[in-house]
Structures are given as C-alpha cells and as structure tokens.
Length: 86
Image: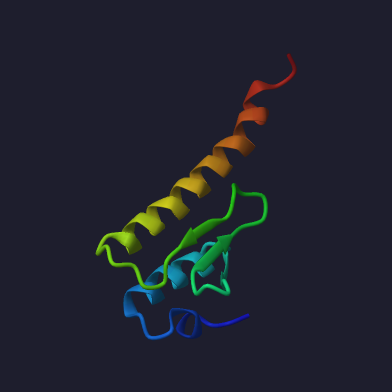
C-alpha cells in the first residue's frame, strides 16, 4: 500500500486528509485520472475527491464526507440491535 506522502504527490493539504483516512481504516488509492478514491469495507459507497482541487474548502469537504460516512455506517449497525425481537 502506498504511503500518505506518495498518495499526496506534493500536496501538503492532502497529506493530512490521507493520514486521517488511513488512521480511520479507509483504503486510499489513486485513480488513473489522478483523483483519490476512499473505500471502507462495510461502509457506504466509495468517496472520490480531486487531488488538485481549486476550491480552498475541498479538503474540509472531503474530510466531512468521510466522517459522515463513518457515522452513517455506525448508525446502520446499531439500529438492528436496538430494535430487538419484534
């Protein structure tokens, strides 16, 4: 697996995002088009982000998407347990 440094390819702001994702159990790969693909087993649909975003909030938006996906996956796991026999 590539390191956060290799995946960021010189974009310092992306390195923090990639390190966060790897630490939370996400798999991060680069697509042929140069985008970043974040996937996690048992989680929602894959999350794509640009590696050279023109918007200064792109990193924060991607981080929010990752956190939101984790929360939704945890809520989906917890909801069947809360229902019990019915």
